[in-house]
Image 1 (cartoon, rainbow, N blue to C red):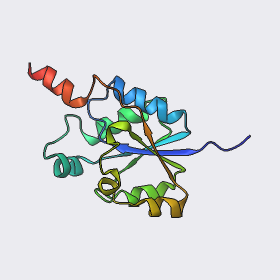
Image 2: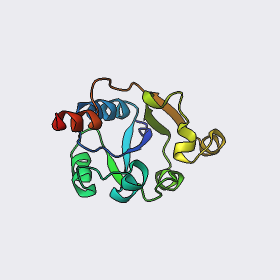
Image 3: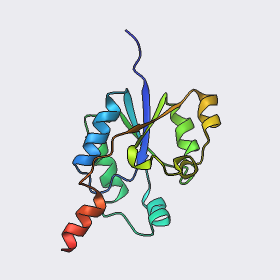
Length: 141
């Protein structure tokens, strides 16, 4: 029996919802899923606002998700290469909402960097109709 592929994905995963679950389920079909979870400080820096749920709350939620094998802290912040190299995945999975945007710059790597490490980048279908921002807006209404 062969060893499953390792899949890396990262994000904030605030207000965990069915779109997150669907994405992680899709990731798990590719292999064992390691989630690199953004810290509260990085979210504040990157998005300009704090997450609703603390890092520990988001960590506990992800650890309880049946499609997640492991969770690590995104300790590199904007330089995702540090967290990626700590896990050396076979695949990096990202939502298709990033297609056509400069995901490489966002993550701090190039195609050559991925190729040198034998890592594939795959885009998985984005779930339309749900987002943490949408939930926050519903609560404001």
